[in-house]
Image (tube, rainbow, N blue to C red; front, side):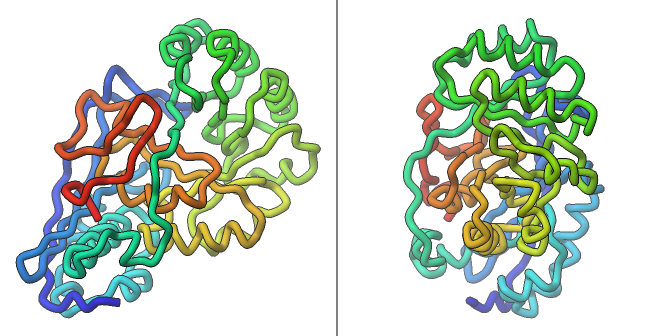
Length: 331
């Protein structure tokens, strides 16, 4: 790995208003709060963005402090590989890892995928998220997005069969994937899966709480089930093989692009399908994730589409098609 001797680190919290609100089973929010890390050396600066996630005990302030605490390590020349051991997987390491990839690519005069010897990403269809609400509200939101080929539907437990039926009626042609965000129980698991299968849902994400998902191994699953909160990095993959058919790789969980790419390779070797996912954030968070898309069956990188405004030089979105980043943004 390239030495970053005498590199300096800067970080800041940034806020992006969400268009309307974004609601899942754990609550609603009206802004995306991100932390941006900048690693500079020899007149060049690499950037990375992360989203601290309260579900994992992360806050913007603690994430900012964790990044700033690495200042001396970067001045001493910590490599990207050494960073993996020096910090735990999570948002802070993600921002620094992606900033390092960006800086290394600039120093080498290469696009990030060439630097990392990965396939060049192309344009991909991204899912577009429909927030949790009443069946009527979700149907109305879905009707406005029914032209999109892939919709991700947030569900929340009781009443989900009615929600997904209303959504399907509003979008008869779209491929549907569902995200329950750990809100189902063993008591309603099979009925909710059956309701999803009945309307042609392709995939259900994380129906049961992480750590309490053993029932998935004991039932006949009528459609593919994807781990999200139950999977973080490579070390969490093997125990999931009896319960899940796919895994959702998010750079904020893996702790950066370096681990995300290694995890994608390991997941494929174990027979999992791959979703590359995101938090609600700007294009700077999505850009590194585009390098995982050549291995992904499902691409869910719609974060900027949910914002009232994106950052400058953001990813190009042509309706539901998302394109690789320009070098002016990242990598």
